[in-house]
Structures are given as C-alpha cells and as structure tokens.
Length: 599
Image (spheres, rainbow, N blue to C red):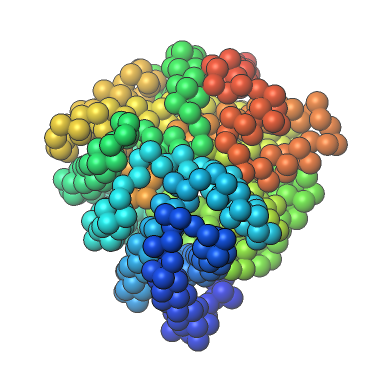
C-alpha cells in the first residue's frame, strides 16, 4: 500500500537547476541591497523625514519580495529533506538558507526597532502606501512587542546566534528522527523500518502490527532518550534566558510568545483548558468505550489510533479510493472544496509514499512564489490516513481561498490554521456518518469521533500541561530523561485517568512537536481549532446556502485580526469565557453518547 509522489520539480527541476540558482542569486543580491539601504538611513530613524519614510517603504517592499523567493527555496529544500532526510545536497543548501535568513534578520533589526518605537503619526504615513496598507494589522501587532525589545546590538547578536545555537537543536532532532531505525519484532521474524513507516503501522487494523510497531518505536527512542532530553532542555533554556533578558520593562514569561504568535490572550487559553479539564471524565468515557469494543478493560497505548475493530472492511484502502472518500465528503459542503481536492490530485501536489529515510508526521506547506500548496504524509491505507488527508487538505484549502490576497494579510496563526484543518476532518466524519447504512459502518464512523475527542481534548492538554510544568522546572535547572519520563507519566495519568493501560512516558521524546526550534507550545492550537471548527460547523444548517460564504469569510480574515476579534465579528461569541468552549464540548459529549447507543 503506497501513496502518490508529489510534484515539486515544476517549481525547481533540481537544486542544481538554473531556476533554483537564479532565485538563489536573486535573494542574495536583494540582501546586499537591503543591507546597504538600511545602513545608509538608520541614522535618520530618530528624527524621520518624509524622505526617510519613503525609503523605509521601499525597504519593506523589497523585504517582502526577498522573503517570498527565499521562502519558496526553503519550502523546496524542506520537501526534499522530508522524503529523504539523508539528502546531503539538500542538507547543505538548507544550512546555507538558514544562514541567509539569519543575515536577513540581522539586517532588518534597525527597521524593526524603528517600526516598534516610532510615533503613531509616522506609522500612519508609512502605511499610506497602496502596497503596504494591508500590513496595518501586522505592524500594529509588532508594535506590541516594543516593551520587550532590546538595543540594536543585542537584537543583532541574538539573531546571529540562532543558526548555530537555538535552531541547530531542532535540526538535530530532525536528523535523528530521519535516521532512526525501528526493529519490528514479530514472533516469527524481525523487520527493520524507518520511523515514518513504524508510525503508520500504529494506525492499522491488525493489533499485532500496532503493538510491534509501538514497542519498536519505544525501544528505538529509549536508546536516544538522553539526546532527546538534551534537545528539549536546550530549546527551553534558550527561550527562558532570552525572555529574562527581555524583561527590562515588564516580566516576559515563557507563555508570552506562544500567546502572541497564536493571537489569543491568556484568559482565552485558560477558559479553553479549564473547560477541557472540567469535562475530562466525560471525555475519557470515549476511550473506555473504545476499549470495550476492543474487548479490553482499558486502551492499550498502541490502540490510540486503531481503526474500529468491527469495521465494515479491515482491508487497507488504496489511495485513489481514500482521496475519493475525502473529495465526496467535501462535495457535500461545497463543490469548491471538492474541486480543490481534485486539483491537488490532478496536479500531483500530494506526497504519500512509504520510504526508508522519510521523516515522520504530516503537514501542508506551500510555495510562496507560485502560491501553490503541497500536502505531505505517509499513506498506508488506514482510516486514520484518510482523516490525515482531509486534515492537511483543509489547510491547503485555507491557503487556496486566500491566494489572491496581499502577503500582509496572509500570516494567520496556528490557532486559526488548525481550525481549517479540523473543520475538514469534521466534514469528512459527518459525511461518512450520514452515508453509513450498516451498524458496522455507523460504528466505524462514530469511532473516529471518539478518537478525535481523546486526541484533542485529552492528549493535547497533556502536551500543554507537560510543557508548562517542564518550563517551570527548567527555570531552575535541566531535567534528566528520567525526570521527563516521570513528569509525562504524572500528567498523562491526570488527564487519561484509567482509560489507558499505563502512560506513554517517552511521548515527549518521540513527539516531534516538542522539538520544533521555531515554536514552543505547538499543542493548544489543535484543541482551539477542534472546538472552534465544531462551533462553525454547528451553524451549517442555520446558514443554509450562505454557510460556505461565511466560512470563507472567516478564513480570509484569519490573517488580519486576533482570534477573539475574529470570532466576535463572525459568530458574535466571547471566547474568553468557558461557556463558548462548553457548547462545543457538549457536541462532543453527544457524539460519545451516540457511540454508546450504537454499541
């Protein structure tokens, strides 16, 4: 069972191609121009004239052009390394592009500080330019960071150290996860596979495959747990130290950046997590019902992504059939969404192969220069794989409906990005449930609702709470692999209770999200997106023919306002209160009750 091969050669035929080299040369020429232009005018920033403002406008426009091309090159290299983490040519170029972005960031430090600290009247003049008007929200957001900014020399130093310091740890994890081999120890044989294939096997119908793969992953990461511990400690230590240095005017905590980047307040996050916590016992019932159907007292750790044990068919689903299921589901909501899926297939913009050096996980990315999305995953025909397809295509559709907008309006946060992806999963699940005829089909589809509830309302809060407590402890010292295991066990037990047979103590090591250099707390946005998407979908009948227009309007606003403002504008709801989140959780609890009635 194998998925399709994506086409990235239409963007660049190869790293050695003329097209790649021309763009490579272009961004370095732009960098030199930016460095020169900024050095010539930064002395004027204290008392800017109209001429200074015009020059800054030109610099910002050139920066946009440079970032679009550099971002396209970066996406291409990331795609290359995702399918083959041992690609030495791509690794070398990726290292060079990291250095390029460091130099670009350093060059732009004076401009960033100018935008943060100049008078409002200067900002008004600056944004009075047709190309820059769409950047108003982004600029206003950046100005909020002024209270944490450092002098130019220190900001430049931090930027220069990123590549060899902070970012290098994330790259080490990527290299490690791409090279680890997993021993699948069956009773009659042993197979050696990469992490991506082993992870895919934990989602299959055969329990022996799931168990062998899960135990193999645990054994593999057990050997590398100290390396993983060093990585998470280094990433957290860097962030904590930087936050302390920036706390010159007011205290900056480890939560400031995650909240700012996701455009939500602490009050909103607290309301959401508290709603999850107060309903945890009811949500855990979903896991208990799953275990019951598996004829177990509680879920084994390798059962968390298992398909329904009484599925209409236990056979793996070929990709052509799987993508048709997604396309047909989307068609029930919008022909436009279905057409988008077909376009992704026709243009070969989906990667799903099983390869030995392929990295784990799934994602949607895009080439900024051509405004083309791509979906990455390892497809092996499980129902979970079809859900992943829908999820990532939901991301792709989000970007697609915004492709005509200015770059200044397209930087949307993870909270709202995950809303689009989980919305697509919800559409898939609802469509399958509607079409289900037999009891087995209904149970199979309702099973997906339970998996989603356990993942988004239990597993994601586990990640958030683990990371929060880890950062609190990391303020004092590094934590050993054993201590991280114990912390994970404690948090896991608090949230899962007795719904699972033990705790995944190494979850912090084998879950990529804890090791991303660019972002901390890569977790709570998923719960946000899950519950928000349910809130949107609940209005489908109410809005009737106008539903899709409302949904697209929400997507198009995701890059130009905070999450609180967006939801108040389009749904008239206050997300800083637990009541908003409770309404969506009640929908989930009804789904769990429906499953119980089916079995």
